[in-house]
Length: 105
Image (cartoon, rainbow, N blue to C red; front, top):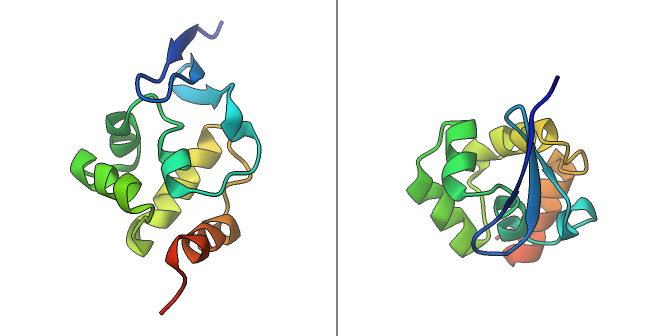
């Protein structure tokens, strides 16, 4: 049987359901979103995302602050998001978010 625990993101106040190491969001992220920071904030903590993808937590803080994820990390973030049930987070979605955040030079 799967163990489920409800928790709240300390910064956003959004509710989460953690199930056997997977994250399912009950709040506003289940619909289409427009910001990288919103995606990052879907995890209970930035440390949790960093550990899931093998990144440094300071890097994840920078990504949220700049609303950009370096291209070297985007595939890992997409896979992590999809593993958490966020199936709309795709390569096309990621490109569109970065276009909105500042466009290509």
